[in-house]
Length: 118
Image (tube, rainbow, N blue to C red; front, side, top):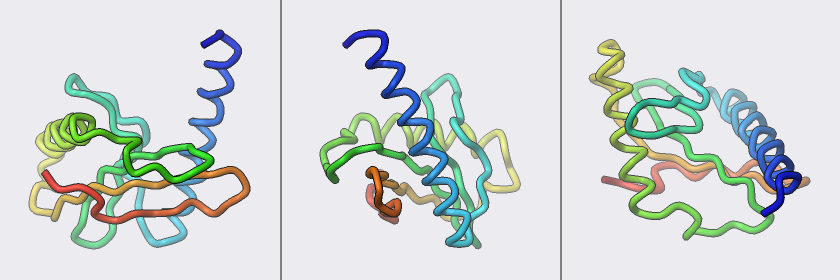
């Protein structure tokens, strides 16, 4: 992959995260963190709505692909969410959920709720 290709992919990924964030806000979610990086890994978005806190993985793809996030990646996301929640005790009693938002060019972001369970 060339440097220019990587840069284009990075720009598209950041735009996809922005579109996902906007779509979730319109659905009533409050964004707690964007690109949360901790020792255990990274979570694209951490959002809250009511009594639920969700780790959201954003995928910028032309076509939906269920295999785009491996079981191992979800486990890393789960560890990172637990570490985040340990640092924010006010959120400790909330239900945890793992969501995914697929962003495709020219389409509204597709939000999959509770797509994985540890």
